[in-house]
Image 1 (cartoon, rainbow, N blue to C red):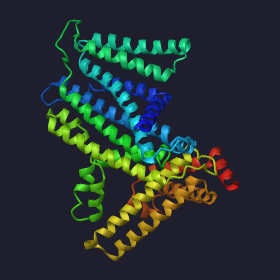
Image 2: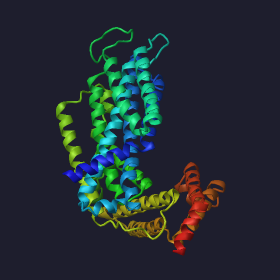
Image 3: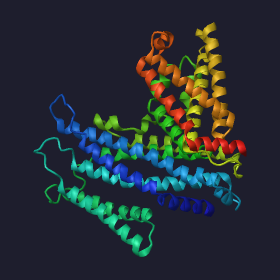
Image 4: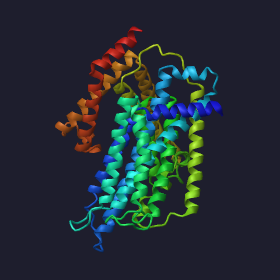
Length: 464
């Protein structure tokens, strides 16, 4: 337990010292305020635009908290786990000795504490904006206590952190985080008693309990995605980890749409639906919009579901970390563009394999053409997976293969857009906007391959 706490504390302090941590918090503040300003365009059938504007602002705010939580989880987990593995600092900790499972759980606990602190700060700002309300008309009063007290707390925290950094040598990012936590908490606490006219009001006026409960469910989802990010970081770099977390969030948010309709007739889809987290239970935007109550039983069930998913994610992460080689890599670390292309290639390969497996699992409707298509998708997926893996590791032959493939894809898609008649077979399957998008993406891949840093990376890998 002492080793676990030491890893957790060190990870927490390391995370809140990262500049990206404060930058993401500040960016979330700005997006929350922007959501308040953009929520004045609703149309209510009853004419009560004030209520619908307020609900839209709450919906945007909860979505912003979720998005910010995903980004914080990914960048924090990659900074304290994937980077430590690449820099060989993780080997020093493991050699203490510290069990690898303890190392992963301690890293998760530290990142989760840091993300909790960030979500808490962003939630304070969100609740201030909920209390202020949307200004739907020029006659609506401005909530000056929220503006004056909130901005004073924020400005004072920045000034104190800067003074402490120059005079006492405080670390700016961690200092501003702690000072904001104290001052913003005091600011919201005072605002809950002070009304718009600087008069005393009942505690928590204009801040509904349902909003607090919706924030709590969003926080559960963030903790789950933090566990996914930590598990992915044991094997993947920052960009692939981000893609994994976004994929889990999207698949979970559309769980019923993706897996509910065909799960009864297809065993593969049913299995995917069983292992994919259903994050709809954590997203209470619709409940707030429709004024549906969030009950205590639902919260307890959701919390238990989140705990099981977190435990499963950490178990998978610990299992993957058990066989992870921590010795120094023979080649230099790959550039971000190379990691991005390799990650996208792996995602496309996984999708092709899944599509092939789904087609074969639907045995009642199998035809010769379907079998050929499914087998082709399986083979192509395996080949793309292997090539993407070698590309990420810096194999020179994979560079030329990817470059040739992206150039060919750019030429074909751009040619279909410019000259649709000779390529009717392709235009029939994809419309011109889709072909233009494919041409733009493949052209971007070509540019990444032609960057000097990318070419130097593969040249050095070949020399090694």
